[in-house]
Length: 139
Image 1 (cartoon, helix red, strand yellow):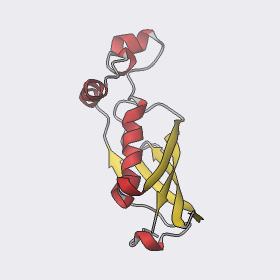
Image 2 (spheres, rainbow, N blue to C red):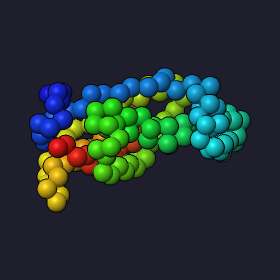
Image 3 (cartoon, rainbow, N blue to C red):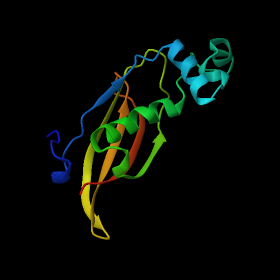
């Protein structure tokens, strides 16, 4: 069930999904310029193929940013207490990425109500590209 009121968040509630893409070569080039990540595996098809890859692939932090939006659009940056993720597969050119979150638990720390959110970024074929967790204050 999608959340309405952050103060009432409980385990099992889902956060509104965020999508981005499809990933284009132009998007990867713009992100390389903005992030300073100029690894040629992300922007040079010839380099990627010589390295044994089928094509360029997205910078991991591009998907990380999409996953972070799920949390910050719902709770705001000021409520964020922790955020982490791990990369589980490459985000390819033309992938459409859906980022979602489910509240795993509600707990208190020093009188502050918090929730732990399990997060996942998936490509259109169901392949998980990034998984993570965030902790958010909810009172």
